[in-house]
Length: 547
Image (tube, rainbow, N blue to C red; front, side, top):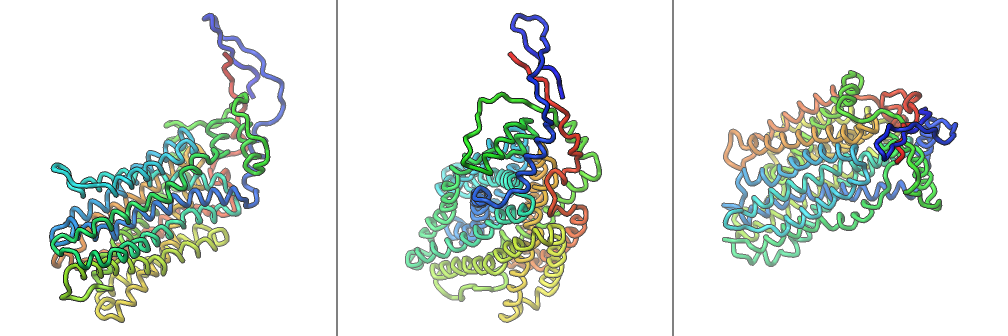
């Protein structure tokens, strides 16, 4: 420990060294004791609050992302030629959000490690709220078409959504006790399923509310559908507005205060305050005694990840998420196309255009609701039951293996599975099963593991890199789906969909191998998983400059 403090002289003379106050306690032991309090804490109201506040963000994320599934069809009826968006317009409104999300994950992941989780938490939610309002109020002008305006707003919204991934993951993992960390992070992420479900449910309500107006509308304009997509998208900001206050008031994580701000005394007091809210508030004006611990820098980042044992984990988390999102977003953002391609719920031929429009929109909403309720939501919560007992790695391996098998069957058996109504039912069952094993599998674990396996000073950055790799997969899937789905057939025929499903199977197979690079994280503290020696982590007290 440093035995002197550098005193700054105001008269330009040389700095003087003065003795610190006598203190014999071991700062390293205080750090370990505070971390042990966090790691061994019983589940409390504070833990539930963290799950709820972080989960609302993911609910909003999923609602905003997957509502475009329904809204893009509505936009086609109102603004598209032939009552459909052209391929470039459809791709633009769907891919803009993943592109923005990729940017947000990298940016906010880095900022959360640089300036703090608390300072950034809520900023990304405000971006999402503003961008959602912007979409709902978008219109056309002489120079800008409404689709162009929507693409810009959806990109900005994606930046906010991207920030939610590393921030919510790291905050929930750093506050969680070791034995429930997987379930806490799982509960946060599982809110995506309810967001997806509510997007379809709100879609049904909105479409049904405007039924008579739509059916009696002028088939040349179908203008009554315009307020429907605006309501569907605009209502996505409501849960975000409700959660904003709680996000802005959530405390900083003790691990950030200890290991990045290097203030063990403040972190220890914060831990006690979190575990016992009846204690007096921490004094913000208390003297800060900073300790010597490894600091984040480009040189230190290269040193840490130049070791194969650390680099292979980053490769494993990043590629696994990339491979998973190829299929997850390839299916999720195109479920309406797939449902129409296989003839599930398609309106009868020969009906007037307004009636066809109403039936088509309602069928897409119902289809998405079924897919969500039958596969997405159960998968998240079955994973919740087993993530802290089976472990993350076995669940991710099992998920990738099952998805490989399911997509092989769906792809190579596509023609037979879509030949008759009975066979189509089997196809929908397999589709729901794929959704189930995505969530009781790699879709959940690829979110959890990167929030656990890296040291505090790089935890958010590395999670952002891993998540951004996933969004790169989503972009590749979305662009590929849009460009490949009609190859070999007429426009909007979906002739190539079966081969796209076969491609998904290949990426699920590669995900099995990337999972083998990952360690098992259940039952281990975040410090054990960091691959850094904790005995010598605190080198002593820094020399403090006293004015």
